[in-house]
Image 1 (tube, one colour):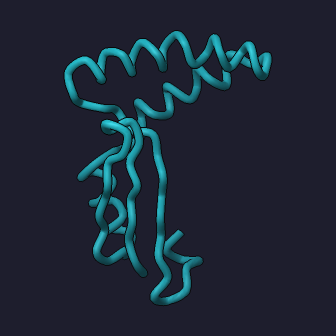
Image 2: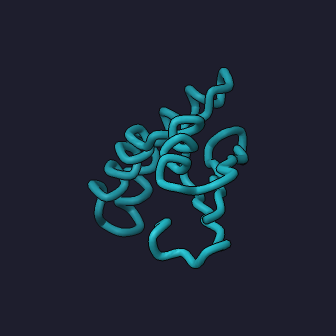
Length: 95
């Protein structure tokens, strides 16, 4: 992404996250593990795609770890903002 941005360009990434608050974390894990694949199958007839969504969220290097990756890739002023009790995060940086 850094390579294709113009100088001064901004990167904004909206990514699912793993909430850490008690109660929210447990509810979110149950929802992502069981409800999301079931509802996804009902709408799209493809449960596997929605099971993969949870696996992808679990594997994503979130928080400070992703900010370090952005900085190592050349982005300046990387920062984040958690939304919806930590269920998703916006990551921003500039080239």
